[in-house]
Amino acid sequence: MKSKNLSRKAIALLAIAASTFCFAFPALAGNTAKTGWSAYLTNWNTADTPNRQKQNTSDGYISASSVSGNRTIRAWMLGYSNEDVRSGTVTLTSGSVGYVTNQTYQIYGRKQVHMRLQNTQNVAGTEAAGLWSPDNK
Image (cartoon, rainbow, N blue to C red; front, side, top):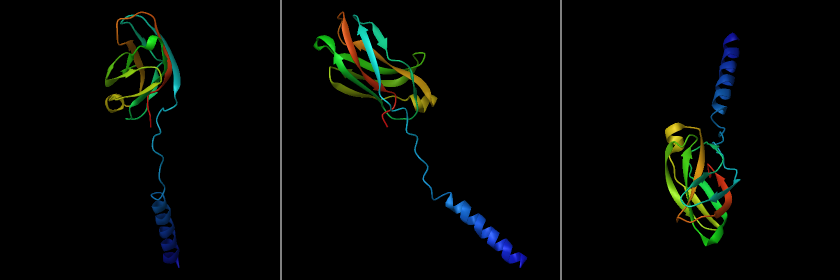
């Protein structure tokens, strides 16, 4: 009788253990909410978006809802203290979207990052605004 109870308990424990492998755990969603940025860019000077935490290996997202004077700006990603994160660069005009390649998560894991913005020409008084996210998926 004791052997039968032990067998039932062992089977129950095995069933519980096996059932834990049947559930899919959610993937890390990342920091994908799109938040606003705006900048007034003079000549070759730069401006930065606010810092946010990079949470996965996806590209960063940035869009420009407006860039004054029919001009073009460039954007790239940097770490919190302006560390190199092996970022690509995208160019933006009014209404455009860019995806910024980077190695932040591979190098540092979760880390605060920002986008750096700059005119593509030495011109004064470029106003620009849009949305950005450190992760796009």
